[in-house]
Length: 240
Image 1 (cartoon, rainbow, N blue to C red):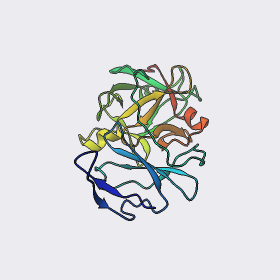
Image 2 (image 1 turned 30 degrees about the horizontal axis):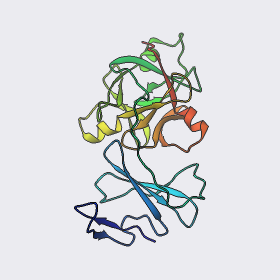
Image 3 (image 1 turned 90 degrees about the vertical axis):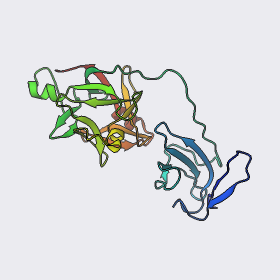
Image 4 (image 1 turned 60 degrees about the vertical axis):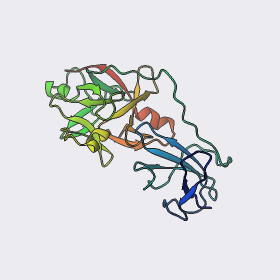
């Protein structure tokens, strides 16, 4: 029950088998593959867990040479087999004005805002009585995404960009590398409340900026309402 890898110059074949056995590290009992291309030009394969009733996905960013460890999809019943996933591109969605200065308020903790603290991105309380320095640290400029201008990045007054490193959100100077650009690019998605936005990681699709213990992280969605609330933020008038 291993998934094999074959290539052909035409859709109708003939095909040449390139990899067999556990070549991608998915293990056995993986069936029903469905392959889609991601917005960041990577690829995602969805896999039927077969033996445990679960459904998994794995990503490749080097044209199928290597794959991430399978991650189980949340919220799938486990009663369907050999499902198909089709990517759909539709108009509309969230629009976030670029080259505009904003503060980002938590949707479910409305007194808490993004703020730079010792180079990390936290979610402390910021109010009208906060110091000028705290208000400045809670102010960001929304700019076109460093890795994809259709997405967005966030820059503070010192020129540092919000990025993830070790899945912790932080602010660092742009070092000009492609890796930094991907880490600092986020795709705007619809939030849980009116006017709120969720920010999906460009290079880790399915991972979102969210607060946990009043710190900002990039974590995979677990499919719960609480995660969606914790990952929803409202762009508001800048504090500074």
